[in-house]
Amino acid sequence: MSDYNPIAPKYRPKGEEPPSPEKKWLDAIEEQVQQAQERGDFDNLAGQGKPLNLQGNPWAGDWEMAYKAMSNAGYVPEWIERDKEIRQAIHEAQRMLERHLTWDAEAVAELGRLPDKKRGPKRQVILNARASVVRRYREKVALINSKITTFNLICPVPSMHRFKLRPDEEIAQFESRLTAI
Image (cartoon, rainbow, N blue to C red):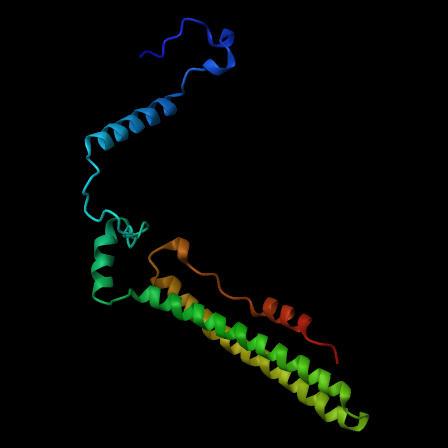
């Protein structure tokens, strides 16, 4: 069957557009697959009816075999372990702020229920706790940023390098969520 049509494209009815080269290519592939199915080429393939093994690493390139051997031996490259540690440390620092917000809201609510003469000391406790959590957060971020610097030096994939955390921005957001006293 030929795709030749002697009528110029602008004079053809709308449904009779010639197929694009991509369509021709896809149709040829589809035809070959259908012929192979009819011949039974896909019958009794290894792993038929079982889930696909998607363990391959599409970013590994030439290193995939080496990474597979390391994975089978239980070894994880140092930079991957470091990234995992960084993610965990970031999560813990954020949880610390979230836990303090919960405590702070409860403490401020309790402050409102206290008689006037007992509010002063309780208010100071809340303010000291706020200052303490900010100081501890800054210390944690300094440690995390040090880990990020080391990680960026050993990570072989530049697109996976991490930006350092900016504690001032996170602290400003944290302080904006504190209940006014």
